Amino acid sequence: MTISIGTFNLNNLFSRFNFRGTVAESPSVSSGGITLSFEAGGVDVRSFMGRLVKEKEPAETQMIADRIRDAMQVDVLAVQEVEHIEILKQFNHDYLGGAYREVVLVEGNDTRLIDVGLLSKLPVGSITSHQTARHPDAPEKRVFGRDLLQVEILDDQGRKLFTVYNTHMKSHYVPFNEDPVAGAAKANLRRRQQAEMIRDIIAREERTDARYVVLGDMNDPPDSPDLAPMLHIEGNDLVNALDHAVETRPPKAESPGQGPGPQTATWTHRFNPPGPAFPEYEQFDQIWLSPALAPTLAGAHIDRRTKHGGDGSDHDPAWIELDL
Image 1 (cartoon, rainbow, N blue to C red):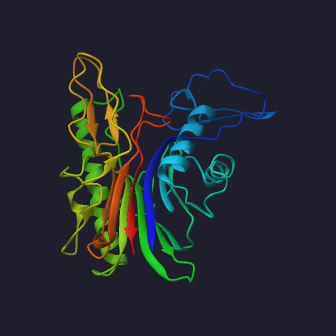
Image 2: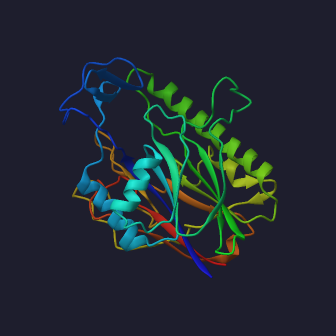
Image 3: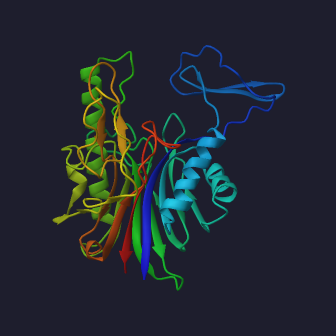
């Protein structure tokens, strides 16, 4: 029995509705979260940090759907940056032709209202959200900005095949009004605390011989010291399933003067910093297998973008096949 499982950051799959018509701009806002304006006609504006938040452009939504439907064709897909379960259901119905019979999403904690979710052609069992988890070093706040979503994947007879842990960890973004060095250290600490919580949660939830997958947008390369805690669980070292991933096509060549391009075939995220620095290529989107599941790995793939900025997303999707 071969089962494919993938991860894809859908890059702001939002559904924003202005009941009065199209909103061209947002009012001046100084707060840091989502702002709603209500008037007699209903919801007028939704904005984030003073910027109008719009639904994802249909052309970009179609591009990510094409990549899922044509390139990936996976049985189980973990997704990130989705506003809510209704837009994920709509995306599955309108753009994927209802290919996935199971749609899973639990609201998280992010101020941008982006969540992690899951689409599955296979039955799902228990669904557990860990969005209320708190790190012992910072018990006053929830450690996951989005969630650690735990979902059991079953066969058609209801037997558990493996468990998926999907997450979207703290980014490297530092607000312009913060000190860049202190802000970066703060973000790295938060990511490390998230990795430690993932380790502790899985150690509590799973036996040492259990079959499970940890995947998602980790916002750090696999060898980052801040991710290290979640890769060593009760004496078991997780296996990077994308170590030898095959690209669906060669990457687009960099323009003259923009550096040599990627140094590895397993990158999923490209960042072009301001100034003279060359673009950076990293494997932020990752799939890790428990030692009990790792021997079933039969293949790994990354759908390579055709444009530097990405095809509907600034992340390239990755997926694997398991021979169970």
